[in-house]
Image (tube, rainbow, N blue to C red; front, side, top):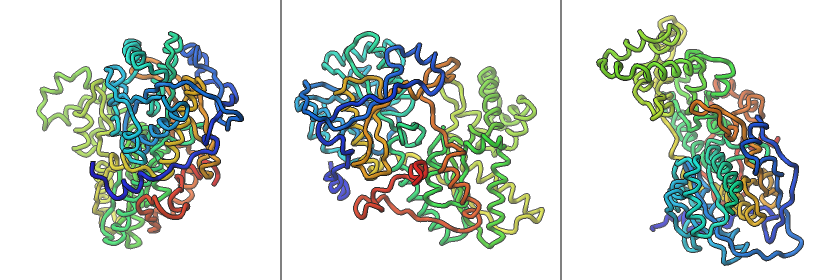
Length: 548
C-alpha cells in the first residue's frame, strides 16, 4: 500500500488517554440505573441487563493477573472517522489484559458474524491502520442483528473461535441490537459478553454519560473547511448564493455545529421548523427575506446551510409524504400505466385538497422524486430528495414574484452542494483519534471487569485528556419504546437539537447579525501538528454544552 506523507507521519501519533487507563484499572460501581422512558416495558424485555450500575474506572491499587481472552469486533453501519483507533485501543487493551489475548474482526459488519466471515487482527495489521480514517480494515455493513436465528448462528463461530466478548462499534440502532444480543446471550448462559461503542457523524447518539458520538468532531471540521472555502469564494466573486445540504437525517447537529464554526448567512435547523410548525413556504420566505435584505445592501451573494432531513421535519410535508406512501401503495399498478408527462396531474387530482396544493407547488424534479424513488417498504427515500435544489428553485420563484411587486431589487444566481460522504472517512482529528482510542481501550476494561450490555463511555473531554473519565453505561439506560415498521420496539432514544440548549441559543443570538453582515469564518483544514489550541479543540457544540 502506497502511503502519503500525512499517513506516514500520523502512524507515529500516540493518542492521549485518561490517566486512569495508564496501567491496571479497577471498576467502581456508581448509581444504579433505569431507562430514559417506558421503564416497565424495557425492564420486562431486558430482565438480565436492566438496572445495572454506571461504571467508572480508577487506577488499581494492586496488580491483578487475568487469563488470556479472545475478543471479536464488528464495525456496523455508516463510516465515521476514528473507527480504526477504537479497534487499535481495543487491541492494545486486550493485550494489556494478557499478552496472549487475541482479537478477531468480523468482515463487512454484523453480516460477517452471521456468515462466519472473519480475520484475526494482529499487531502488524493494527499498526497499518492507527490514526487513519475509514472502516477498510475489516469493512462495515448494515445487517441488523434482530433475530434469534442470527444470534444462534453467530454463537456457533464465537464458540469455535473461543471468543468470550464481542465489541460492536455503531450508532443508535447498532447499539440497540448489541443490547438485545447481550440480553439473549446472558439469558442463555452463552458465556459471551457484548459491549458497544458510540459511533455516528450525525451526533444524535449522546446523553449525560455519552458526551458525543465519535466521528462528529472530524466530519464537522471537514465540512466546515469546505464551507469556509465556499464562503471565501462567495465573498470574492460576489454573485452566487450557495445552498449547501449537510448530512444529518434525524437531527441537525452537523448543520448547527458547522454554522457555529463558519457563520453562514442562513442555517435552517429542522427541530425548530417542526417546533414552530413552519410550512415549506415559511422556510422559503425566511431564506428569500435574507436574500432580499442583503441585496438591498448591494450584496447579491450568501450561504445557506440545510440539514439532510429537513423535509421530514416540515409538518405539512410529512403529511403529504404519508398520504403519498398510502396512495401509491394501494394504486401502484394504475400509477405505472399513466404516461410520465401526465403522472403529476394524476397525483394532484387524487390527493386531499391541502396535500394536492402543496404537491402542485413543488418543482417538477422534486415532485417526481417523491413518487418514483421508493424503498423496499414502499416509502419515499427522503435522503434522495435534493432539498438544496428544491429550496434554491423555490426561493428563486418567490424572488421573481417579489421583483414584479417591487420588493426585490437584486440579482439571484445559485450554486448547490451536498456534503456527505466527504466527511465520513476523513483521517480523524486529534480529538477523535484520542477519544476513539480511549473508547476502545475502555471497552477492553469493561470486558476484563466481566461486564455485558454496556456502552463504552469517556467523559469530561473538553478538559485535557489525562482528566478524562473512562467508564461504562448500561445500554438499557438510554432506551425507550418507539414505533418501528408498525410495532413498538425498544430503541436507544435519539438526541435531537435542544432548542433550549446552549449551542442553539448561541446560534440564535448571532443569526440575525450573520444574515445581514458578511461575517464569514474560514476554519481551514484539520490541523494535526502545532499548538494545542489549534490541534486539540473539541466541537463548539461540546464546549457550549459544558459551559466553556
